[in-house]
Length: 377
Image (cartoon, rainbow, N blue to C red):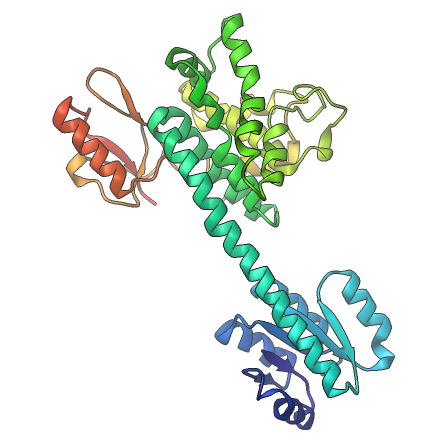
């Protein structure tokens, strides 16, 4: 753990008290603490004094929250600072606060509770990043085999929504990212001809429209057995809801009351349909802007000002390669098809070793149209 105080003798006393139980690092100023966090972090626990010359404890705690969000933060303060400490607690910047002088037994109990809190937070993150993502990956791998077009759309949506979430400071971003990955999972039940119409935004027959309308309920049933996906399921539930409140589900919800991930998916997926029809990115964006009431204007504006080239990532810096030249990490700029027109992989998908082997097998058996177009990153 990292202890921060501008009184060296207090740090020495704390080190003597705690060194038998914890691995201790100290800093005698806020600026030093922030540098230590950057160079030696993350720590399980950060204990910081509130009032220090220069960079105070409040700034240390705020920056620590951004640099190492899993670190449990504890505030050490004098009684005169209680009002400030309470304000910091209410902001959610710390786990506990202690007043000086602090009895050793209270300090030990608090730090042990802080270590346990860090363990729980870390375990939760591992569950989300490994267990849940593993489950989602298994589902999307099946989607990739059954419907390359739907899988490609899901991966493109996930790429864009990740960048938008970062630009909009959405935290945590994982529910929106997972929702994007799973947004097309219901398409596994659609016949190929219907799926092709959905992919290109073509008109549907009445029976086809009914099948598409049933997909949200199917997805809800499918994902209902996976724990911790409640926020993802909520995003998917409202992904067809318009910003003005029209659309599905038929509930009195509109505007920012609709989950951010749902609002983002609503515009991203419709934009992707327009691109699938062959529209240039600029025209597709203007078409989206012209649909009054459908989308969150702030998200549309952000989509149009992505400085990293999100909308044109597959349009610029493209080169051509043969199947034998594919390498993991490349991104396909165009759909990959056999000579008979069978879609094997949709544009936007990142190449991995399994995909390379699959394309090599198809090339040997039925032939793959080459050269392939790869987007450079």
